[in-house]
Amino acid sequence: MTGGMHPLDSDGVPARMRLAASRWQVIRRHVEDGRPLTQIAKEAGIALRTVQRWHAAYQRDGIAGLAPVEPLKRGRRTHPDLQVFIEGLALTKPQRSIAAIARKAQTKAAQQGWPAVSYNTVRSIIRSLDPGMVMLAHHGPVAYRDHFELVWRHRAEHANATWQADHTQLDILIVDANHQPVRPWLTVILDDYSRAVCGYMVFVGAPSALNTALALRQGIWPKHHPNWPMCGIPDVLYVDHGPDFTSGHLAQTARDLHFEIIYSTIARPQGRGKIERIFGTLNTELLAELPGYLTDGQRQPDPVLTLTELDAAIGDFIADNYHHRTHPELGDTPQHAWLGDGWLPRLPESIDELNLLLLSVAKHRIVRRDGVHFQGLRYVSPLLAAYVKEPVVIRYDPRDISEIRVFYKDQFLCKAVDPDHAAATVSLKEIQTARAARRRELRGQINQRIAVVADHHNVPPTPRTPPVQPRPKKPKLRTYFEDD
Image (cartoon, one colour):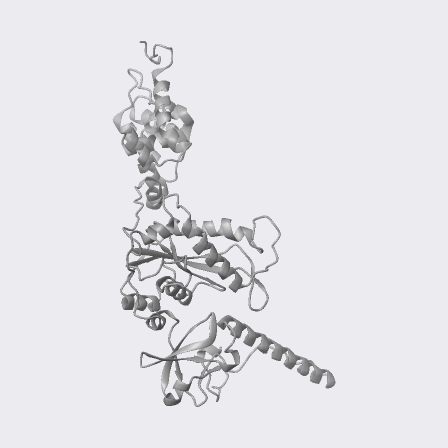
């Protein structure tokens, strides 16, 4: 066979192209079917790095790039030092084109008196480099990790071994307490083993430690819904580094309930796809059928549902639909996988103990003769009569502050109610919104009266917000932080 000619098989097809076709049959299952390269390499009995190199060559040059590098012609071998020079140019930043590297290599060869190299030779040298090494050199360790390091897709060994917690802003508009459109948030507590939703919380406003605690409270304590048996204290809670998850309140709760908090690596949330999948399921299968659903490129819809109505819709979908259908990765329903052959979850001694740990950050109050004052409301209970002028700690559910729980020296004392709202559900957000609206109304009335006085005396009205305000004196009346 003369130099420069391709060896042919019996049917006239060059051996290099036949080899390229066979390599394509290996990586085709990844390119077209999406199967992992690790699985393909294992089934084919080929080194993973080899399969990765074939895939990188295919991405650059298609099937032709899978053909092996042609051997150099006799008498035209590349000088070893020149080859090292070419490889160094290919790995330095900024990344150069093959043509630019070839020109520098030809200049270097002429200066050193080495045999000249062709463009094809330079290209062959560059393509023979380890794709992982090239990725690491030009794009850094993060890109190398995401493309070439093996990923261990871990699954917990049993139900309640590991719970995940995360938030998402829902693609739907609802009506808030002030009758304004708003996008709510959702916190989900997911059991890693069964993919069952153990608890959730729908709320308006940014995620907070309190909303996370309320979702955990629902997840831990047994629910009244007959199709929702998930409950108990997890062994591990897996979360990211959000401020609501790194709060001292949650850490103290974990110590008291004897579970461990594990934080995902910053910028590398391995395993978060499991909880993101339930977010996608809720978005595409439930929210898309509800009024107020937000769709890209379409006019903003008019909100219809309230927060309570959306909360009920999400709860019914999880308990009656999601938990009872086969999960494609498990081959079983989340509810059946969580129940297993029957077992007893670890529970707190009482709901009051759980409330003491999870229901909000402690608020200290003094019992007055007419009850406990909080957020402009007054809470009473016959049991408070013996504790007048005593310091107590109150805890509350911000979704319904018509009732508070009172603790004295870390012991549950009683439930106290606001007589004016005893028969209604009043959220903290509603109270705060109503108070802000009242302040705006009073400010408007003040400005109207100032304007009338200014017009009567033919003097310009006093600006509502003077450019310089003296430091206000400390108020004589006692105020609370929550009243701001």
